Length: 150
Image (cartoon, rainbow, N blue to C red; front, side):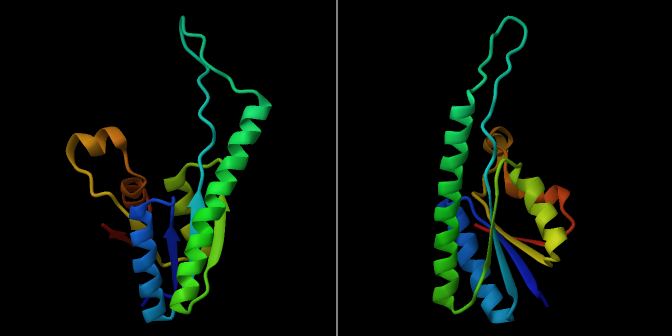
């Protein structure tokens, strides 16, 4: 049914649950697996009106990018270990300085994935509204089926 599954991770326990489920599903279906970790860029506040804002130096940007790479490598190494323990291989992908939901959707399309598996906190009401959800965005904006794991 599914030949290529895209799993996303941000290193959280919720994402780890999604990885576990997605890896087990891929093994059962003998599907290929791609695991993606998307790290966002350093938020810059250019200010508005009377506020002066904050613009980081190149050194601060470079340090942030290096830390993001290290975090993503850690998440992806964990995903690789989980896949190997299950007896499957996984292609690992880190996309830096990008919006997660948009990048997940674009990657699923360009890689020919026919299922996206993501974890979700399952927030509702005002918490969901104020905290947002990459999973909700992928569900709303994507055209590839999404399996959400709580």
